[in-house]
Image 1 (spheres, rainbow, N blue to C red):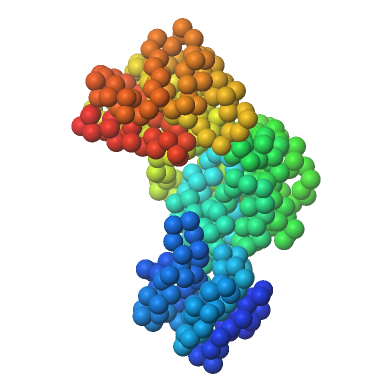
Image 2: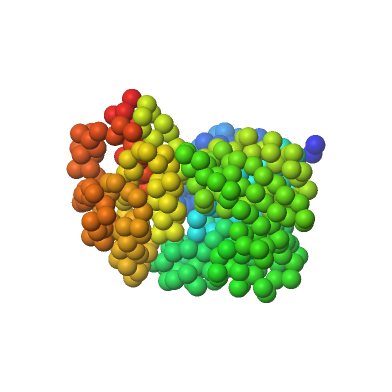
Length: 462
């Protein structure tokens, strides 16, 4: 199969690009912003980041025989004597997106765009596992879903790929519109609209406004939209689209899910009704939220012509994404490592899961701050405390400045509750505690690094 190539003409057509030494230019078959990852016929784009400036590595990549480099125009004097082809642009970060957009147009793959306040990474992983049974699948690595990550993900896709599952993240207005116009999805889904990134997106309506850009761009290009009918804002918003598929746990959806039961390990058995047919399976990952993520992935997989048999085969490949509802059993202790990130909606979903796993075990929640909630931060943390009061949870340990609002909202229904201003004090308590026949949830925002709690628990219990 022929490789995807960027030609000299492609670069002549880039906005504000000027090409030097074009007579030495050879077609580009790979693009990198990492000076350590340079291959044959590679273009190195010098990006200026918070910690490193790619321009400082230009001479290093030339020694590695890079084919061409792209630099900012204000660096021209510094590199005017380069003998290899080089391209100057006003802003290499923006031009990275422009190059990725050209690359995307050369791909034969169907592009699936995914965003949402919670569950987008897990839905991406589930969908990629299902589709890999039938197609050669490319997907976003880890959570490289921003203005840099989306272009890099597209540029790493090859001619052999038949489907690319692209995750789109945001915390400011305009970011998803930007990345969606680069990826140009054929299919698009928003997992849900929750209380995330409110520091900049203000409220759920602001979250919808920002994330809906993925649907708008896809619809404008003639793509297929998938609407979560269980989300009140999405269900209403989805009515504006003519070409759409709906999914949810209500009777009005094209793909209707029903959770038949949840076992002692928190895993759901789900039944899905669609096109006068029924599909039933036990999911290998825990939590009602993952049943919802699976339903979204199932709907997309079906529209890409996967059979029930293929989906059941793909189901066996599904594993929990790193630090996202990862369940580990050590002797008589079960740890739910959900430490990657947190917002009020995902926090409530994980707490609900905690309350349902192993009914005979003691339930313990170790919770950190939820960030980027803006002026609603105190109220939303307090609501988590009130939510816990309605569950059967035996012990709650909170850590951080904001999570003290969770602690203060707990009432007498929680037998043991403690708050720690700093993590080292919490770690000391954990080392002294007995966690036999317990289920422990660990959750907090990324900046809290709650995985350190998981590591301490794992070391103690082994």
